Length: 356
Image 1 (cartoon, helix red, strand yellow):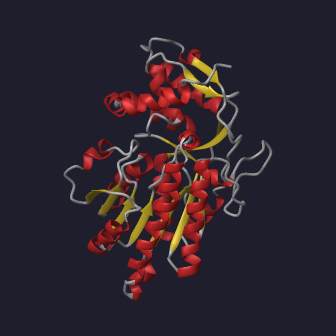
Image 2 (spheres, one colour):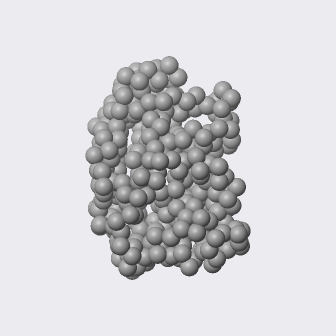
Image 3 (spheres, one colour):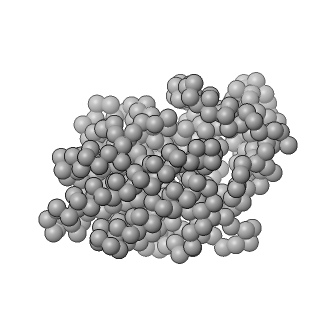
């Protein structure tokens, strides 16, 4: 039994499905069900006794303590976070509340539980904190990729809140001995991603013949990681990772935003030729850049490859094709998540951005 927090979000729900499929193990899934949390992602587990869902907040210490005592998990995997940079620019308070204060309360409840365990269970227990490469800041075009020893230099409220949570997790290991491991991943993509993020936004807009908004000159670079590969990496870290260590997880797929747009559109041209506008790339619209937009991220994943024998299985071309196919086959899911709140956010974030 493990406890997964944020297990109804994009990466969390993929991990929950992956964990039960790959290990057969049971888990408790604690999720607040904010706008990005969606139990439809876990519909296939509706009658599966191995999946115990609890609606709740990681900042609710009494609830977390109750779940820990009741279910006696051998590990906690913490996905719970506000994660969208644009939202953090317009409303940073929620990011401090969840990513900083929430992580603190989760650590406090976990520490009390861990200290109550018998010696052998204390030794085998793990707290795995899932974080982001954005804590490292921005790279120049010729800079080497981020490593686990790259100094933190967060540039957005989101990145700063995740950096703070990473530091708290580290401190609880060095101060109290809590057996933690931290992972810092690059940009994920794949099934069940909320369509405020770049790749699903492109897919959803393109098949409706709507503009594909690209910030600035479209040359900002990210490393892209297929979500199933990320899940496999987390399982490897949980099983064999060294306590107190950090592992960077990347997809070895640096692409500019413009390259991503062109790749998605080329796949849609093949798989969805009935869209109202063909070719889909003709919908590309350059809009005013967001404040403080980091120019480049890149991950050096050699440590996890060397120590844990993990490397990504999916290359970007194949991963994008699988992702596009998933969204085309799940348009009912897309329609369900595009609620009034979603449309309100799209209007708020993109409505005032002039074309350039």
